[in-house]
Image 1 (cartoon, rainbow, N blue to C red):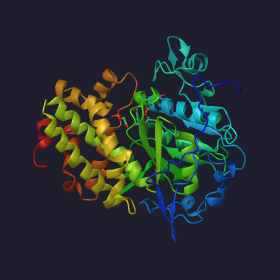
Image 2: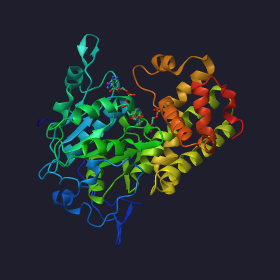
Image 3: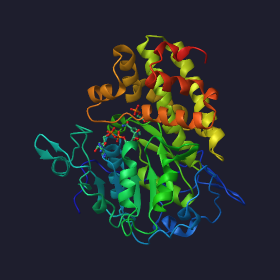
Length: 419
Ligand SMILES: NC(=O)C1=CN([C@@H]2O[C@H](COP(=O)(O)OP(=O)(O)OC[C@H]3O[C@@H](n4cnc5c(N)ncnc54)[C@H](O)[C@@H]3O)[C@@H](O)[C@H]2O)C=CC1
Ligand SMILES: O=C(CO)COP(=O)(O)O
């Protein structure tokens, strides 16, 4: 494809952007402060992987795949595939397609996006997106670049792709992974990143989605999360995001794919912290919505945010070895995402409606979200199941109350009692 994207593309800036970003290597600290925004192809090669970087230790079940070293990243141009096309999937796809066009010496120009086929006003959604360059169903009125191509079959989306971006609602990740884990589907050496917010719980075990993807596909997997309400990002309002990476070379790759003038990327070596902050802030956002529904004021909501942040950080420190408290206090993925979601997110909005109407979350999701998916309620349930299994629910009273109010008929008024 040789057509230009609809949005104006500015040339790469010779800049130093990896502020606050460093890796504690086994023998020395590696700072990214001098890495150019558009690194040359050589810098994107596999050569750096594992040389001096210590991958942060993360709690995860052992798997035969994880025991093997990652295959080398294929040489030549990288090909980006976006797996998911909801509001966040489409907004991230827009940024990635604009950036690969900018860096087309290093990347294939076409970015394929998996669109689960649907009919909108009698027409296929993939055809609408490819003809109008808008996702009228999930991100209306936003011009998408012309080098972003909607594709209905997952296997066609990932064919020859070396960089896989996972951004489905978390409910559907297992189905996607089952299809991708079949032999010959994924390009050997491919890297992955997840922007999905949630956790995977099995009894007393908990796993991030980055770890789940890595264990199923054998792809070194990063995590992207931040104060990123999709529509505001798509409208190119300035914001920041955090990418937790397993190595410096992965940081360079994902930085090239996502950093832009209005979407500032900070890479840190804390995949678990970034994943967990994104998942757990959705539980706190439900509490914030309960407070709004009860018409309590700013002081109460601020208290909920503070206590929620403490529980988010405490949970990650307790169960994910090697994750860092600064991810919660200093990064967009922590405090900033908590704030934006507790004021402008879907979880907050639906929880407020839950208090006002007494309807179930399923009904509210259908009524208010127009096909988009609520993530916080399932996460509240998963986290509660895990904490109960570990006999630690009492140590996280806010998480416990959100679960009980959402699923056990406990009065929303209880949200502020006994914290
Ligand atoms: N929307 C936002 O502002 C942000 C969302 N996220 C996270 O990104 C992830 C994806 O969220 P969104 O893109 O907003 O999705 P969304 O909430 O807009 O959901 C719609 C998407 O779900 C897909 N879908 C519906 N039923 C399906 C099924 N049975 N199988 C497979 N796919 C199905 C649709 O095809 C569509 O792509 C979530 O984990 C969310 O928490 C993260 C940051 C911002
Ligand atoms: O994760 C989000 C912003 O970063 C969006 O949160 P909601 O799913 O509550 O809208």
